[in-house]
Structure formats: structure tokens, C-alpha cells
Amino acid sequence: MKTPVITARLLNKSYGSTVALGGVSLAINRGEAIAIMGTSGSGKTTLLHCLAGLIVPDHGDVAFHDSVGGADPALINRMSDAQRSALRRDRFGFVFQQGLLLPELTAVENTALPLMVAGLPRRAAEERAAQWLQALGLAGMETRRIGQLSGGQAQRVAIARAQVTAPDIVFADEPTGALDSRTSEEVLTILRDTTLNRNGALVIVTHDEAVAQRCHRVLRLRDGVLEGALAA
Ligand SMILES: Nc1ncnc2c1ncn2[C@@H]1O[C@H](COP(=O)(O)OP(=O)(O)OP(=O)(O)O)[C@@H](O)[C@H]1O
Image (cartoon, rainbow, N blue to C red; front, side):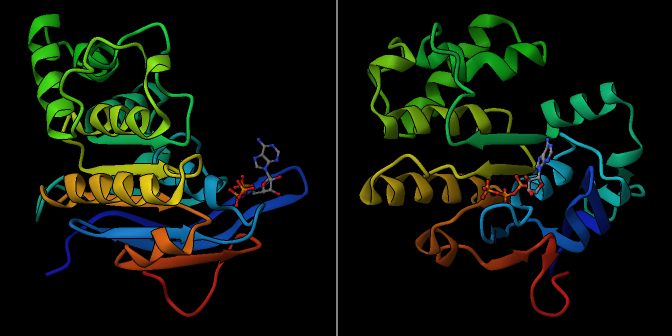
């Protein structure tokens, strides 16, 4: 049975006279990996940011469905900035092409950060972070700074950091964009499996057809509109 975790209805977002999203509706289900594709400027990142509560659409709703058959879904676009940040911190994970890891911190410190922000004491946070790093094949690299890791290793740290809070949904924007094809395949497999194994949902913005083929569904944007019939 499909259980939605995010539903979006008629999302519109413009920047001046540029229509970045022109009425996008969709549903993202638990246990599902979705790729968002489209040419440069078609609105992929804008859509991801609206779904993740990083920006607010001009019109339309984004609903977060907390639990199976639970309370009414929460409308992310009606939340205060503080409520949206708390939702992102507690329920969402993020993996971007680069830039989210703090270079002055070690792999384990970067990974532990979301847990510490959520209030876990440092030692407990770093223990759990180290378990994730080991699970992702980074045993022995916990105390390296990000600059002392390869691109693929750094992306695995980014995945560990996104997964350490067991988020309901992981948002990834070109997570393999800077990697060679073999490393890209490995990183994607890890990202996909670690999310789907606990029935999370994965939303990936990508230009890479090989990445999209590994997802359950591909949504294609053209000029801010989803191609094809109903995507939801
Ligand atoms: N902050 C902004 N200010 C002004 N225009 C913006 C802004 N963000 C996006 N746009 C415009 O909105 C449209 C959609 O941008 P978006 O970044 O969502 O596209 P994209 O499909 O992710 O592109 P790319 O593949 O190049 O990353 C583009 O025309 C872009 O120039």
C-alpha cells in the first residue's frame, strides 16, 4: 500500500517575471525513490526546495504526512520559519553535490552535528555517527577532515550525516554530480539502500539517466511544469 509522506498541490513559484514552477502537483510515498529530471532552468531545484521547506511557494500547498493514518498532514508552506527549520532538522535529511560538510571538522564531527543540534550529548552523538561511518565503509577515517577524503568518501560522509537522524525523507540535489561513474554508482546505491531499508523516501534531482533508472519513478520538468499526465 502506498503511504504518502509528502504531497504537493499546484505549486507555483516565480522569480520576477520568471516562472520557476507553474502548477506542480505530486505525491511522494514512503519506501519510494523519485528522480526529478529536466533541462537546466526547468525548475528542479526550486521544486526540491519547496518540497523540503527551504523556500515557500507563492501559491499551492506542500503537506507533510507525519505518520501512517496519523493526524492531519501539516502544511509546510503555512509554518513559521522556526517550525520549518525544526521540521527540516528532525524529519528531513539533505545531500547536496558539495558544500554542506564543514571542512574544519572531521568526518565523525560532521556526521554527529545534526544529532548535537537536536540536543544529543556529544559523546552519544559521535558514537552513533561512528556507527554510520563504519556502516558506509569509512571505518578508520572518522578523524580525518573533509579535505583529507576523496570525493566519493566525502559524499559518503554527507550521506551518513543525512541518515544519522533517521529522517522520513532524504532530499538530494545532484548528489553524484561531482563523481566518476563507478563512484557515482556506489554512492547512489548507498544513498538509496540506507533510505529505503527503513522505509524512508528519497527525492533526487539529477541530470544523470543512470541515476534516474535506479529510482522507482522519474518526474520530468519542462519550464516549471511536469511532463506527462498526472504525476501524483
Ligand atoms: N533565487 C533566484 N532568483 C531569481 N531567479 C531564480 C532563482 N532561483 C531560480 N531562478 C530561476 O528559476 C528557474 C528555475 O531554476 P532552478 O534552479 O529551479 O532550475 P534547475 O532545473 O534546478 O536548473 P539547473 O539544472 O541548472 O540547476 C530558472 O530560470 C532560474 O534562473
